[in-house]
Length: 382
Image (cartoon, rainbow, N blue to C red; front, side, top):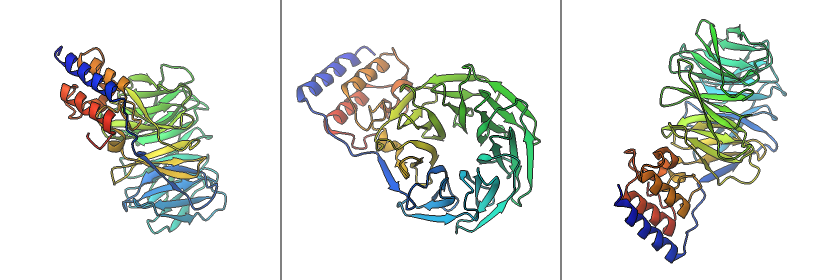
């Protein structure tokens, strides 16, 4: 391991002597939405290979092709206020209408059928293991279930004023949800039985939740500026986000990690399986990323509410060898971080972009590739 030191120092010396760092192309592409002030919110990968999203202010759902072509479809009610959206097992998109207190079923051709009303305001929605759709009701303190035929059943949450928001299908076949007001994570069986788990940090504001590739549930803590992980047994671990007051909103599993939006931080973050968090820039100032999904094209797609755009990020583009913080380039500080990982002083999760072959370590060869990325820019060397 010690023989890596000379090679690294020689490489750094070469970088300093060259006094060069190449600019790289932005890893983020942004697509403007035709309707002004539409306030895009929820987003999901559709059964047709396109990305679908909701427009809160314009009461529309929209389809976005991988090429960036947007088609909008109005919902029947003028002020339905759609937020959550998910692809159902029946081949339709299902939408939670926050203001309309209804659930909408949308075909890939844009045909809409509504069901309801619900007791409370539906917020987010997920596809359950039972082929039904499950949704959170923010102000009614309930979790709802709707069958593909439109039959709605509602289940109360034990803790009063829990304010459920995020909801997802868990690896155990149950439905898991985030209680923003109660600082708890809830687990509900298909029969409606609930068990709740408090976050270690009080008033953490759990907002979104998703199942990770590691078999655990991951969630954002908007008020605590952290990413949380909970095992199916209920053990919770919290991980801080580097940028203060970033206000993490939504997250999705991709690339062996969890990617999340920072509404105030105006960045996209990545939490590795060990909880190490790095952040990616490249967004237009004031974009305000909100919800995020993984497209069938292998890209991450996210809504930019204040900017009225949809963003696209290619994980591989943002993560060239040595790009520890996901900024799109490699710096000398990141090279220093890589050598500390190589020496065993820091866990590889601190710069998993340096471990290009994913063997759990950083080698001299990988550091030399990173040096080339400093000199010549990220050229897709990962």
